[in-house]
Image (tube, rainbow, N blue to C red):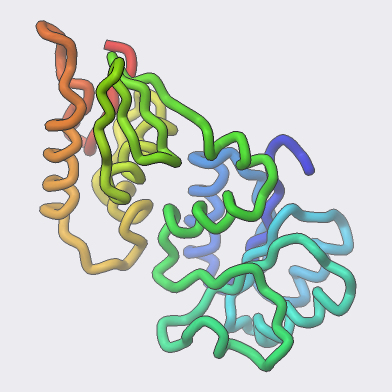
Length: 229
C-alpha cells in the first residue's frame, strides 16, 4: 500500500463527488480518483488498484450493491464502503452475499467516514497513536485526551473531531460551514450556535499559559488553532 492511500470514489452527483474528494485530498492527504458511474469505475480499476473504494448505492448506470458484488466476484479485495441514500438502511441496500466493509449514511460526515477508513487502512495504524502539540498540551485524538504534564483532560467525541480537524489545517482559519460539514455532516440540520457552544467548551479546556494569547482564535472567516503561540 502506498504512503498516501488511493481511494476510488464512485458517485453520480458531480458537485458532491468533487466536494468529498477535495476534503479527502486537502485535509486527509488521500489520493482520490473519481468516477461518475459503474462503467467509469470499472475503467479506473482496469488502469490501477486502490486501497479503498467508496460506492454510492444508486448510480446512473447500475446499482451500487450490484457493483460491489461484481467486484468481489472478480477478486477485488480492498475495503469497499457503500454510501446509502437517506431512505436506506445498512444491510438492506442489496441482496444477500454483499461483501462490503462498511456503510456510509448520507449526508456524508467526514469524521464518520474517516473513522471507518482508519479502521481498515494499514497506514492509519500510525494515526491512531498520533499526537499533536498545542501550546502546553499534547492532544491525542484517538484517546480523546488533552495531556498537560500529569493532567488529563477528556474531550467529547465532537470536541475531539473539531480539534483534530483544526490541527490538520495548520495555522489556516477554517470557515464555520466547513467545520459544521466535516464534524456534523453536510446538509445536517445543525446551527452555528451548536458549533459556537463546542468551541466555547474547547476554549475552557485549552487554557493558554499565563500571559499568552488564546490557543483557539476566532477569525472573520471562522476559527484558527494557534498550536505554537
